[in-house]
Length: 66
Image (cartoon, rainbow, N blue to C red; front, side, top):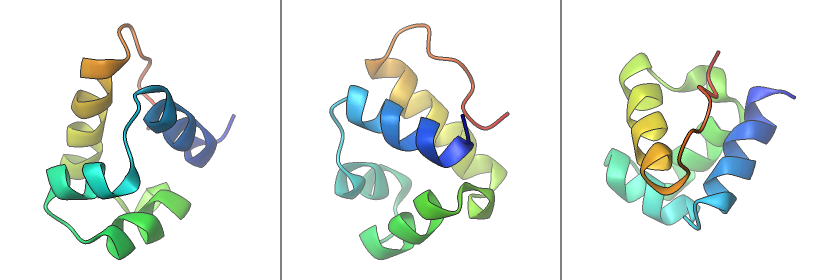
């Protein structure tokens, strides 16, 4: 499964909207949407933050950015 599908799937499993994750990352929703559609554009720090945010809601979640 590609990173984009994993990211969207785990975000939805966590019950979080694009707005909520964008807010936590301190970026706009439109910027988040662009990056969610091309996850390679997330910085390493953003990837780490997203992983932490989702892991709080989805226990034992694998690293989605591998």
